[in-house]
Length: 92
Image 1: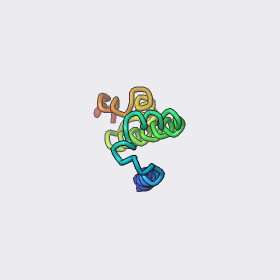
Image 2: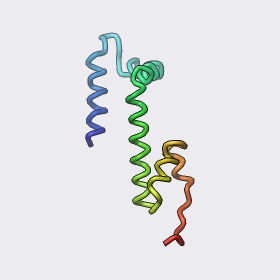
Image 3: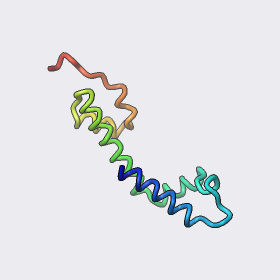
């Protein structure tokens, strides 16, 4: 909930700081998003690591996988890589 609130706050702040000639469609273009990402690379990296660790925790709880291994795979191969990990049910 807090993350959604921060995202909404960022969008509202961007809209309030926009000039009168800018609309929502001209404000959030790919060029502007890439420029923002380059200017705030630390926020992008921290957000990526947070999302990867959250996905690893969810995978650990739902599929009973090793958290450390899943977290490393998630960080290296993106969280989508977690879909290709097969769990051993005979391990118990």
